[in-house]
Image 1 (tube, rainbow, N blue to C red):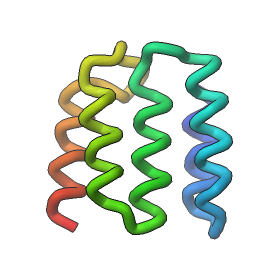
Image 2 (cartoon, helix red, strand yellow):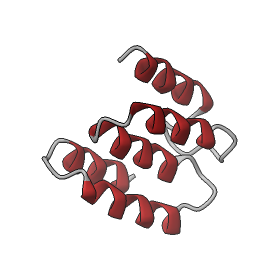
Image 3 (tube, helix red, strand yellow):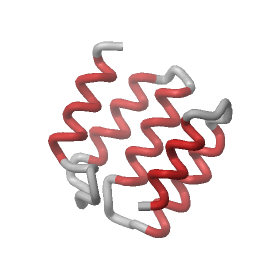
Image 4 (cartoon, helix red, strand yellow):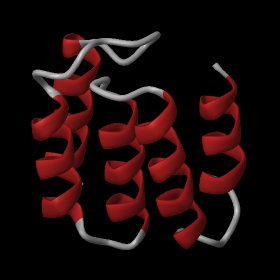
Length: 84
């Protein structure tokens, strides 16, 4: 999943705005999956908007699973964010 590799590179850089660009690409390339919601949540987390990050993950719960982005993973991420 090349998008997740790119996500890692962007997330580890200083630019959060590039995550929004990647989110739009993910939404187009993998519609109806958890991927775009997950990337959106990373953007909100990186910009300090934890509640919005949690909401993005909650929206992803009913979307189609893809790769490591499963319901249990989403629940783990929500729990991790709530502890921040």
